[in-house]
Image (cartoon, rainbow over all chains, first blue to last red; front, side, top):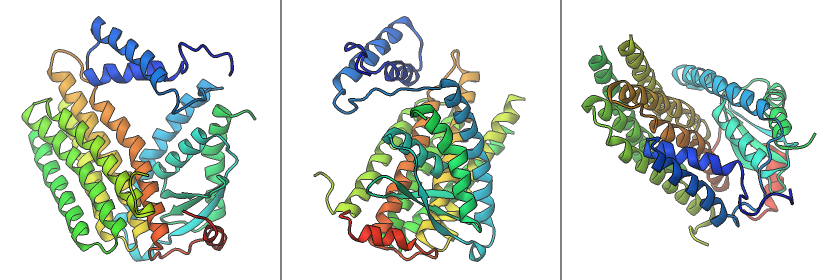
Length: 166
Length: 89
Length: 113
């Protein structure tokens, strides 16, 4: 991590920024590509103090599979929540659960929080001060322990494999 | 077919906006109202995109992008105000 | 064929947007209401935006993908605003039908938020 080049501090962020610029201008003319590359190079340099640590992705294929899984789960989640909303609201059993976290890097925790909110009937509510517990609100859950096990196995484990050493 | 779908979709999105406004007026608490505003801006994006398809004008995209950016910042600022009683520290 | 796909996407999108806002109106406490808009509305608007991207790609000379930008942005920001709203509601101690865990409330009492 100490050996990353100084002129290109974020090798992952730079192409992302270029891609975003091309999407924003909605064209792939050479001029826009050049400008995009320039922005992708300059913006990480100027905002270096926001993220001093470079992001490392250990297993790119796991990441791709995780994104696919997430998209599938989001669609399933929407049908679940739609059915719950259209059903009788008095029969729902909302619960708060505490999810113990094994993740340590803030990026991985942030991604996990976002994933939890986007997927079946759960919204992340609060991260404890020491960053070891996440309070999650579930819209309709009869078996909280099962939910914790599902979240840990389905979302936390891949994120741990991608962003942290295990 | 497409015109019919767009008409129905307009109806649904306008009803959705109406329900958001109702929740905005009803409250009962401050986070409820912020949530209503948050949903309102997302619905406004939906309405703008529908209008864009209906009129065949891609310019509505810029407005939708601005609403998305400003709406998010507004929600965050309001939440931060509730949490801290202060926006800029 | 394309027209049917577009109509399908538009109708699904509008239906989900509607259901999300219906949840905002119907459910009983704040934490439950949070679920409707964050999920259903996000996917609803997402599919409307994809419909718009397909529509303008098929119509104009070039392909138009910039709607994907708003979709991405919404998918990233919606959970963040939901998280902040839930945090604000917990801070204000709003009435909830679900019990907040005892351990967490004790833990939070000592904390400065």
